[in-house]
Length: 255
Image 1 (cartoon, rainbow, N blue to C red):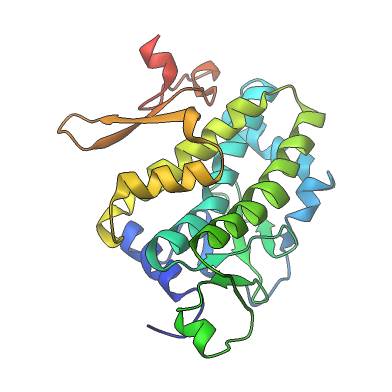
Image 2: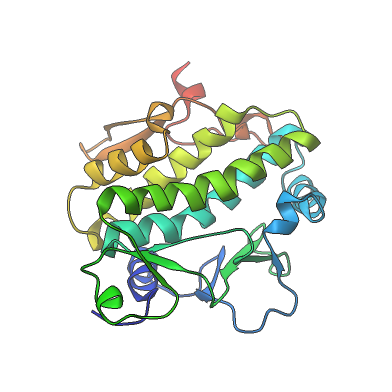
């Protein structure tokens, strides 16, 4: 296995999308020239959050809370994807402290683009070649449970949960609604990447959602040909837009 810490993550993304030119992530994930980028701390502290919410309103034209929910859906999907793919593909977890996640609004194809600083720490198991080689920028944890705990602490507790709190100071939107998008995004991401991942896709999703206490927000049900499909138990509010959209697996569809 290559000694480049994020190589399994970028390989999984490439296999998943068929390209390194992704609509929501910097090519190769890492940002070398930070000019024009800002750390995700500027969303959490509120200084750049109005920019995100304004961009969402211009993009979708819905109510403030619906546009905020959809902005969150996009942001949380692209933030969580490298983390869960790293865990699922190679038990390598980039620890996405908000100060290490960079954002910009310059590419108008997606709502925003995310990248990682080269200083981003990667958590690994003791058996990982990075641990054995003493690779810099690597945190070695004791075992599987500790790796999942590190994933949760960085992705949810230190990053997504504070950003939810910041969003809720701007608009009225429920925590369960927002966390439902996290659970749905993780599940959809793992299912889409399934061909390039080892082990049981369903078990991978169950383990990740269990570690994040999000299991009750989605259900995996048989799709049209028997493949697992994601059924949400909360709504992202896309059905309220001027041009309404009911997503596949939305709880509104089942009502």
